[in-house]
Image (tube, rainbow, N blue to C red):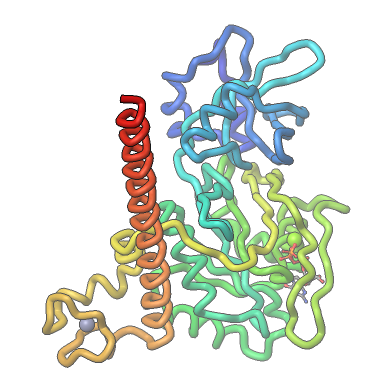
Length: 355
Ligand SMILES: Nc1nc2c(ncn2[C@@H]2O[C@H](COP(=O)(O)OP(=O)(O)OP(=O)(O)O)[C@@H](O)[C@H]2O)c(=O)[nH]1
Ligand SMILES: [Mg+2]
Ligand SMILES: [Zn+2]
């Protein structure tokens, strides 16, 4: 535990009572200070102490300890920071209250951000609008127990943003908040006010060019903040302008994490976890005629008539991906067992030869 915690100052960068409750078992030394990670570049960190930012490095024992659990430090984490003359070290991590995790292209778990209250799923109301992709982002944040808010950006360029809002509501059976805004307009901050209270942390997620950095700049009010980039004419795709996740403070005391657009988002979930986040589907499933109904072509299905076809498609696609992933884990175990058996056999042969 720390000698002292300046709760008021740290609340401005997102400290909550729930986090303070996680700190009692933390092994710290006198003089260690509580700070939040605002940026990660390999082993180099930017930390905020509520007043100012500091460059820091990850203490090797901490890095190894996390690595052994397939874990690493991410933006949004809270750490114990120790001053060692010319360098500041992150020596321990406060267990996060939540963490967004995906699988990278090689199937490894990758933490994205931690300790967030709301995930703003930013999607352009024009050509970027894609309900199937939205389902994937929704599952990503709901798997972590984070509340989503769908933000349709570029409402100023869209003929009927209200219809787009309605389309999202219909798609998710009204279970998620949705709003449309112009990220370049300072009124966007007013529309988001209920989510921007002091001490709250928001993360912006969405494809490249959706307007995440534009909205970050509007909410923080900092001139020359995050770089923003143009989009291609034909399809409004962005150019991956933002390359690292970073945490910023808003004037009202909320924190906002800007992220790069994710290419090909793979979830880290098994089938049961997906059922839990697609609760619009799993709620209806007990009313299907067959207990093991897949809601595909079975007679007496209670889900198919009630859930939009595209939503059901998302559910099936993500379930298939989860199955495929579980398969590969099983296969890997099987392979390992085979190798071990072969090794044992070879050793026995060796022993027999030696007599
Ligand atoms: N008219 C209008 N333009 C917007 C809006 N939001 C973003 N833009 C423009 O869209 C382009 C892309 O915006 P960015 O904020 O860079 O997009 P991003 O989501 O941060 O993209 P990456 O960093 O590549 O992931 C920029 O030219 C913005 O000016 C909006 O609400 N209305
Ligand atoms: Mg950006
Ligand atoms: Zn069914």
